Image 1 (tube, rainbow, N blue to C red):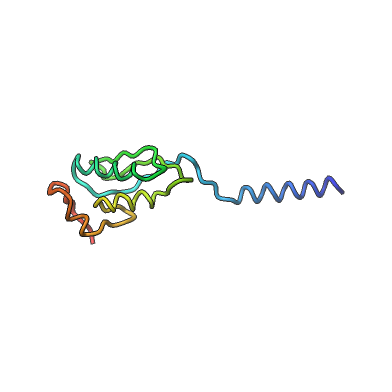
Image 2: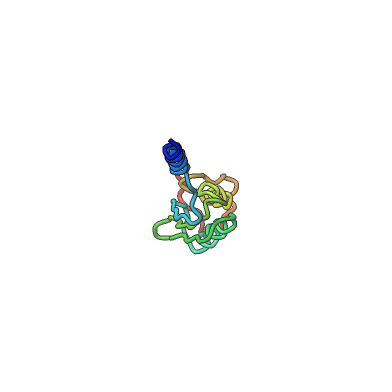
Length: 114
């Protein structure tokens, strides 16, 4: 009887542990970020690296997407998208404010979607 109780308890604890969502230390994420040039690239990557937990940030001009490696225990892709939008670039998750966008250099004005 004692062995059966131990077996039942172990089973319950293992099911509970599997049901919990794990956040990984290094997760690869990507999303679209609007921009045009090397100045945009520097600004976008600098904004991404400013978020605590971003380990790698590479924005591709030709695809207009950013590839990130983040520590999910410290930040989320939404946090990074907010930081990039605050720098003046629309993302797939957050749109930059018009006031900030208008402060970008002339070559950095990208086509904004409504």
